[in-house]
Length: 616
Image (cartoon, rainbow, N blue to C red; front, side, top):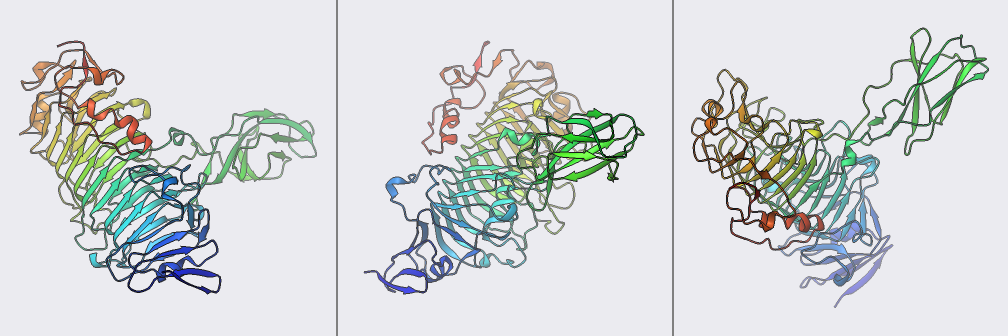
């Protein structure tokens, strides 16, 4: 039986020591007190629609039974266990929100066996820092035993502010952590990295399953800061059924340029005669202490009729102020900052300066990145929308990084990237053997197989190359992938020194289907095909591929070069063409299932459904 008592404004259902109980937390109750009072196996049920404001901590509770914190809604009205939550289905969730720049929720050192379900986590103040912290990424966590463990986030909604963005949704620095069926969006920053989920000081294992991950920097990243735990490499990671994307609108300037700008002569000033040229720049806060500016408006000119010029323009949404720039008849450039939508230039001095040459954009890097990880399976994900901005535009990076010079053991190894769809990107997959800026471990054991990679395009600002590999990774196998791109090169090998490039040993490129492009398999200071293989891949296996439009004389025997590669996703699954490429019958259902957030069984059809070929 549940026993209750009233303490101040807080009502709790108190469990007897021998059994777990349901504890109700109403709007206005002390959530931290409820967390502190929870016992193993308890459920804390938060009032639907209630907002709990503060920086809450999941404490250490003895015992191994899971404590659940969730909104008190009937299960029949909530997404089932295999269905991703959405902003719409989260509309009745209780909210846990930070009222400052600190995380809304974090774990105490060594906290364990907590499960969070059906909760809405809005942004921190102006998007600073992390919304949720699992474990500790700072020097306060220097031993794996200090990391929080057995933590599950299931069907939660984590979101940055549409205007201010958010540095990071979830900081993943624990062990035995599961994040599933959740929705993380509006994670974006100016001049800084941002991640939907990012970790650097957690041992793992991690399971990241069936989530919507929307971020400007990376949807998911391990590494990026040197781990305070000595010799730590995040291990045993499963990433599957996730939809990693970002809006294409983030490619546009954050602040639109002012329009309807006009300048007319007016009375009451001391301007000398001549033609004055004006441009207006809109500005607003863009989170984490940054300010975003628009492009300058189109030039407008005016001649002062009685010593002054009045400039007007239409208001720009969310703009907090405007800078009005003038070029005088003598060629001087000055500006003034105003908060309204008009300015009268009457001869008073402004600040010297010219308008910005480029507008501010959200900083975009890639979609998925491993900098320090071991034994990682990435499968059945849909990854899309990456363009060249703060990096070269490659969407997936396997690149060990000794980020701050204190992690010579940082490494990427034993990674399986399989059964994924990667599309609408400026570049495909980048693999580096070592950190180019400092000592690191060697990238080894990368398996890239049965993926559909298409829409790799120069229109997004990058090279349009599917693969970029160099500085001696080992045991890299690229097998049974279907690839479509419009860049010049299918696979490009590079080295820090092309005079003596480090060998990429154990490389295999087999059973893939794609256009050849102008240069096909190529490398720095090398020519297409065999000469590149000899220079960079001395023991390579390159066979069973369809390099449509390439020259057979430039490649080892056992490959196919006939024309006719056509990627038609509407009819591809019905094709019975034999040959190289991905299993499209298995992959094409992901185009519907993953965006819709429903984990379904993917058909394990035999590898006889490939790509449409007009030639046999």
